[in-house]
Image (cartoon, rainbow, N blue to C red; front, side, top):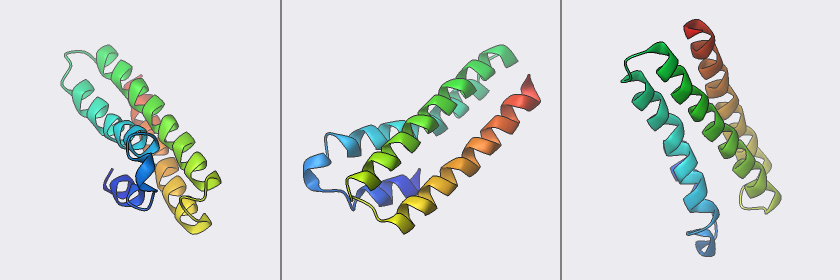
Length: 100
């Protein structure tokens, strides 16, 4: 999440209420849904929140691609943040599998 907040500082100021806002919201949602789901009384509820978290992660990846295509970030930045998001996705997948 901190990486996303640092990354969006590179975006143009006219994206503050557009892509910057959407990307921040989605990144926070990844973590928030994991934490919220963990507090639920059943594994079924927790899984539902983990799937929502995964959807938010996919949304972030879409925004990373868009930011790269719009030249808000360079190839190196894109590769780094996208790789990190894939690592998070793998850990999330393994967590989901362990609960199923």
